[in-house]
Image 1 (cartoon, helix red, strand yellow):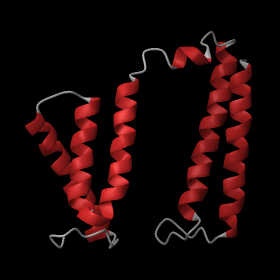
Image 2 (spheres, rainbow, N blue to C red; image 1 turned 90 degrees about the vertical axis):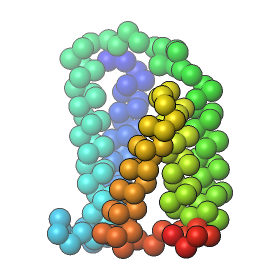
Image 3 (cartoon, rainbow, N blue to C red; image 1 turned 30 degrees about the vertical axis):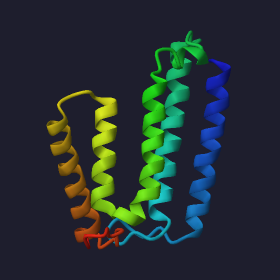
Length: 152
């Protein structure tokens, strides 16, 4: 098995065990009445399962031939940079413009960066995503989202 795989597996397994242990100190609750430790606990369990699967698959395949540098070949750094800039602008503009307007802009920019296409089609997809997330978080979960200058 590759040395990087072993080191990363040990690290992520340790993280998952630590998060499970710490979230058990909080009330996990149940599926119908989750407590503050529910999401971290089950996320850590999934992380641990994926880590164990990584070790098993790596062991069965034998020595991995890919190098770490091979993972970064063909990376389009301009897109990564523009997404990071868009996320930073989102962070700055969210309190001023509100959730709906800012998230819509972020979604259009992110989709235009990742998948080139017709702008009106990307805008419709972004609108569907923003309205669905607003419906889930603001209406169903009653999460207070930042309101913009227009009051929504």
